[in-house]
Length: 289
Image (tube, rainbow, N blue to C red; front, side):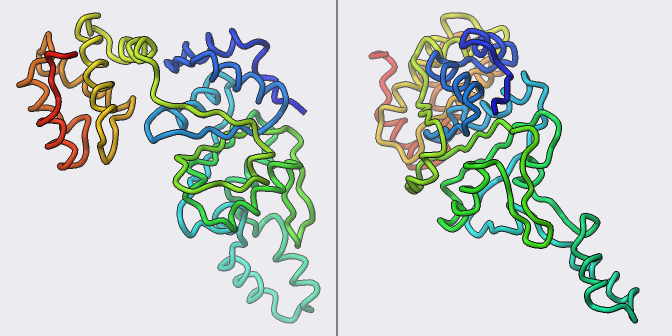
């Protein structure tokens, strides 16, 4: 069962670009294969390189609903799959005094009392859907077990209601910053894509597309400085989003070139830790860029 959103790799690149997402050939190819094969797509890489934005862009070009499961330490079945509306169930039990337990149980474990969470919502949807399982590596290992049935057979078992199978398979994107190793069982169910920091030319294109009015010279300078910062041993390297923010900052400041004064006065836009700012201020040499 395929999702059928794209017909070629070139079409993926063109349609994503129309949303402002400039995909490398590797990204466009892997998205096309995930769509054509009906496989979940595991996207791994450092923070801020466009993993989450990729899922949003696919949803936009496909005219699909975006259903997002944001993972974090402690997320559990009730937050990921479904839970019962206990307050409403209690009211129903109270109102049905005099009924047998069998009669009451049949009623309170029906659709009216079910609260679907992201995974069940995506599986039951009859509309085009992109399911984003964001920052999968931040969830506990046990949560991966919840995902295996969903990613293998695109179905979820609700003991009180039975098995719910997808009638229209969602396009699934899992993202990971690789803060912990995901299980081999989970990886086997997915196509894998690593997104690193873009090549210089691609990052220049991204900046020009996101920052109207910026000229070629300033764009090149911004990208070169950010590249030099990423080469340093920093606590947190600048993301692509921070490159774009810095380019907008320089335009707002009226800067037409990247000078020592401009860089040092605006490092807080691209670096978010004081130790990184001090290191960059001491080591960055614009004359060598």
